[in-house]
Length: 142
Image (spheres, helix red, strand yellow):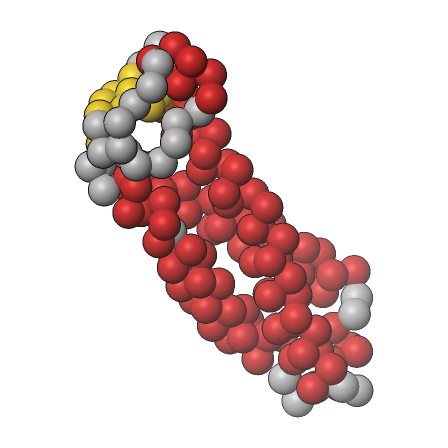
């Protein structure tokens, strides 16, 4: 099993804590890649719903703003294109794991765990801007 040593003020996995015994705050804690990946998934996956809801609200807003001309986009091809874009947006969401895991490998892990919500907020804003541009081209064509 691959493990690294990081200075962490966050309570480690209970199973790991049993193996290592009591740890003083600020002391090096052994955290495995598996634990870091699990922590990342526990953080990011529940928030994917918020990300998708924000993008869905933008799409619905532009669809309604362009009504009644936007109803011409409700075709099989139009719906399949929106599904494709939704899948693509979720693939882009997965990119958040790269800086998250990288930051967890550093000595700034404890700081990162407190501030990674900023990456989520910036990602939602950036995805919202891209979604807006797609909606302008998709619904506002007339």
